[in-house]
Length: 447
Image (cartoon, rainbow, N blue to C red; front, side):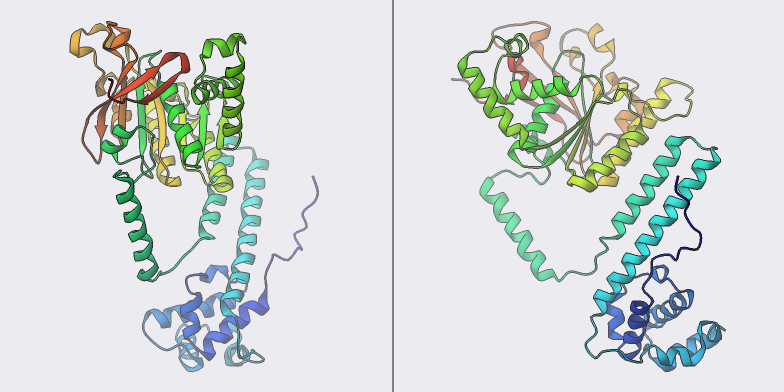
């Protein structure tokens, strides 16, 4: 490993720092331009940092910021001499151009501050790694968190005039009125479901639950198709059970509406190939990202999601499925406690990234021991359910009567039960299900 010299000077631009302070002394309105861009800790020199702190203090107390008030403030704090005295303050305005782009200078100073912070994080990570006292996963998680915080700070914004906001909102209302679809969140593609939920909203933890073989994965992939192909959004899929190749086959069969058995056996006709080629082309142009790491932990999933969000502007996460995850490297008294940590972690990721997160969940076998109408799943059927039910904003159960008592009326039918909705009604919607295509569809009136 290359030796990192301790004599290296950390990134800085003292000329830009002095110019900013001098410009404020010449016209304190300049402070209003940059106080949301810069913080005192962004200055490299301690004396500049303290001068800027005093300037902010004067402004926050509705006092003018000029040579006299600043000198008085520093004297009262017994800091005037330590920053270089009155002569240094007077020198800050020497040689400044009349038309100074103070906002540009502020961004230079913040850029250098960001570089220093990255160096600090790298140094701290190296030190902890050499000490070999903490788990590597914990060190990685802390490093990811610190870098993510820096990235967020790069987008500090201030006030926006209400005029353009009114125009944008009015335009959005017009679009909703034209669509006649009261959906304010990300659409699932299932019209009746979107009407009841108003779509998937930022920070939502959405649970899709059912017994094995009822189409949990298919439903989630159908939602991913709609979000990525129809809406052009970015979707991250964590598949703990199926490989990425298996998922892509599912996508192709669903999008092309080709019998999955024919695809898996290779018995395809000319029309099938045409449909497959078209579907493959559409899928290749989407922003769908698949991670098929088995037994992924919450810290790993959080880290990968943060990175994907930074690189591609993530709009939706799908986790298939929750019970195959691990909480972290720590020990748990029981599986229920671990599931609680997992569900809290998933909700935290959704909130942190400001996007909806769909997690597939298994149901307990208790649902199969019931008869009649009681066979419909309910919240208590969620496996290790207490925390999942509490953390979820929306819980969707898949119920297919044809799996229990097939009749001419229920073959190819599915019921999507809204078992919980934090900000809306519960109820159910009817969908069509084509098993051969592994695809759910909106249910249109039959002739």
